[in-house]
Image (cartoon, rainbow over all chains, first blue to last red; front, top):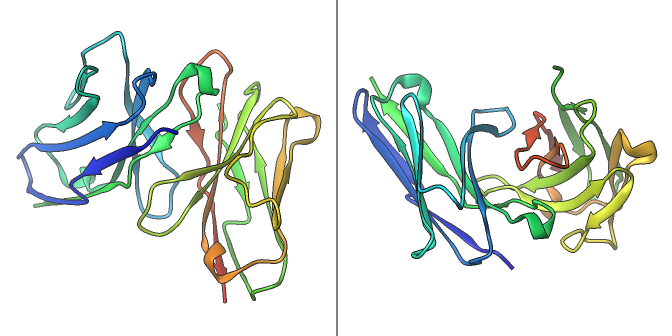
Length: 113
Length: 113
């Protein structure tokens, strides 16, 4: 089955700096790669996603890049703010598997004011 | 639109007791998922329903866990008997069949003592 590895496990950045989280996946048939943000006591919330026919997608301060050949994808957060502090999860799925999401282990991001 | 509703929010039980969790998905979402999230880890799929049929329950410990989705709407997840290692947050999510994206509920935090 699919295996998703996520790095780093923790990330501390100064407010205003950029944060980058990287994930690799094992199943070359995976074609959908979402990123979720989870705040304390809440369920994961989708913040951005990318499909395998696109190499990059941007939404305001967040962007995701996908390298299908290398089977890795990354989340980029620019101009970080204290409210970006949370745990971020990457995931992968494929339509053929019923859209079952396989998650990475998570990255705890702390934005220091 | 209303989100995914889960109850209870918290539950503390002794090992070998039984417990049940309830989920009401977003109206019109045919696909429903139960995930288990152990502290410090990414969510792991337990079971996936489409309408009231099971699509994937390969990761469900069937000797103690059971789930049903009556009439293709609400779902319950039961654990009987509970073990200490079942302590986790149980997340319910739903999605439309034609879309990849999930919406998660806030989860039920289970502590087995």
